Length: 302
Image: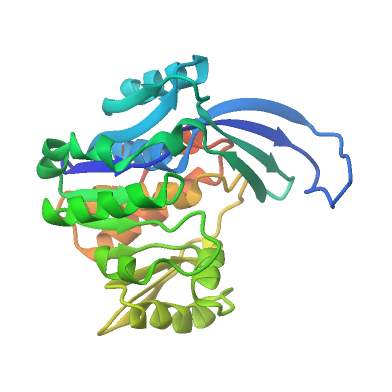
């Protein structure tokens, strides 16, 4: 695969605590371990796309600090073009505080830092990156105005636009739905976007149809161990996934999005793109961490 993917989004340093379970309000638990790892939904998706076969460029912002330098160096080591990753004075690099329990589930608090400094003006200087790309990925860990500008510029450049609406607390601006070629929420995000319960392929279908009625072109709802529900105006399909023993679900969704994008950029059909994303995500959840868990293409079935 040698398609080109541009990712507009976040770069975070993940601060990871492992504990027997997630704490209740006001409770103090003793944890097992603490570590740091490169993360951020944008950077995770960029790494996944690169490891799974795409040529990738990242557009984002970090602080002028040690975390920012480490994140940029890590992406460059992956072969990712970081010429459009800016260092911003006076703000810290974004961080994510991640608590992981013994069942592999997580709770995450993010602080935007440099990610909040990514403006539409940063994008206007990157027209050539977008013109050279087949696929653009955006998420919601950068300002809304930047997300909207990225989708607009991506469509003008002829990119296939993927919007991963994460994190999200409620419906998106109405005109956003039609700006993306693929809307890819997970079950909780789909529920937040639609107000409908989503916990299975059966309950995901009404939510997908609601998103299509809102203007989305194509919807993929990722359901963790229950696979992926795809829907467009003409059809819907459920793509199951083989069970695995999950260790840490951090970045599983990002791995799916990156793999899906890499396959689309290389001209693969929808079903093959979904399969690659699922295979990569299934392997990622068997490993700890965000970017450290993301597999390379050679680790997956041919």
